[in-house]
Length: 163
Image (cartoon, rainbow, N blue to C red):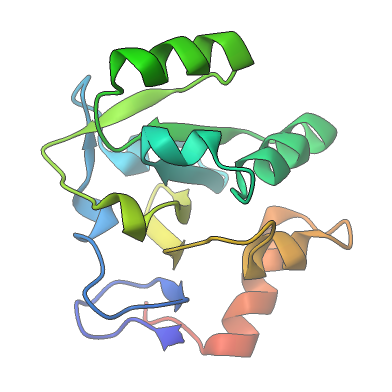
């Protein structure tokens, strides 16, 4: 755990970093937008999930959707690949809405879900392989903190990211 200084990112990296996925600051959506374009200035949460992850009981997806509902904050749910027909039917039946799909990025299912906090400058916090019912970021938000306060807490705990 700690600040990711190797690639010049200013993100705080939590969780497993060995063999992690491509730099999310360079990810694009199938509609051509870059990840940083998902925010209008305030940080937002982006979850990149394999469609099969949406259906797991242990996924943090439910906790993030509850946080979004209770705070009015925006959580972007992006699929890492095109869902199969069966996954598409289940997503529709369960009412899980997605906000887009990543394009030109290969993220193995076992690396997802990937949590990001993004602002106009790029990725601030990245967590991969979030398997439990919570995550360090969700835990930091649990006490009613704002997203900015939670990011500041994680930054203090895991090291100041480079500017």
